[in-house]
Length: 501
Image (cartoon, helix red, strand yellow):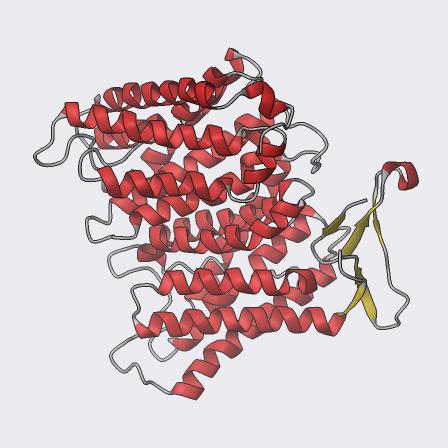
């Protein structure tokens, strides 16, 4: 038998020959115990007060870190906030589920109403909101106004509208809840041994990626408790935006739960994802990726963390959806995976459907960021560079990206297990490599869907269209070369038999 940690309740997975393969709840006999943890260490009882205390503590520390980071004006504030969420998830996941966010609580309830009932969800949400408010009051009460030259007010940036802020809060709260549900709240990859180790990393990196991409528009709360806490901190100047933010954050949670059920209709690791679920996963992932690219690039050259934001979002999308569709989100990667053979894709028809879905989502993501911000940008060589330079560097660095995907995410047997917990980071960091190495040459696109989205958005705003064709050709060539090199360096038969380590 294996062990898993569920949301809200602690469960033991019984083997099929003894319990019909059903998920059963083991309630402890302790009169005050609500749930029992079955771990690889030793059984432990989790009392109601322990779970509630964990949620209060985690939410308080998260919101307190948000307040201090923003008030201090640190350029690395988003890194601090994402990091504290990451370590708190690692610390308290086995106690309370480490939600720390009423939107996440709502998403978990919608996904698992029998395991995590409405009353429990309400209790969690009240505790989280109370912790957020207490954290805000604590900052004001303990420190007074040591940051006299800094004003913290929740709401859209001065040049942005409430509609723009609401859309950003909706989309990235959706992404945060979606990643939580798909890495720590399902019976798929997220609750395997590897997934439980990666869940905290994935959840923390959502905040880092989303904060860098959309924080300049809405402030980047993505959490009703955080919104309330920041509203409390800035109450002398303004109060009430948190109520509007809650509406769109909770709406994002509802959509996240709905789409999680679309991509995981059986919520089971044992059943293979249907083609429809795979296509849905590619649509979701590619749209969010291209939208994030756009929000980062329109900030201009002063956004030094843009590449990190894009890589972070790619990492979390792969962790969330990699076990559903493979987490390609890139026609060049799909071409490489299909060309590599070995049963990695069922047919050329499946590969073409992937590419069509990615292209449609790329188009949608590009038009969405252009409409939201009113800004677009074109494709082409940077200063002093030529289209020949663009073509060459896009081939080389797309080759690196596709080769890393093939060697870390598509192997089988022992070789696959060697990379199972870090493959998303390996892939994401190739984006960092390409973005910083050739960003000044070609923009470091490395993805035909991204190129199409950028080109289309620019055309809608009156710019020239057509550069995406050059980029796509170079990127597909890079992917094809990666497949042939992979074939020459990795023996598919030996890896399938698990003979190589």
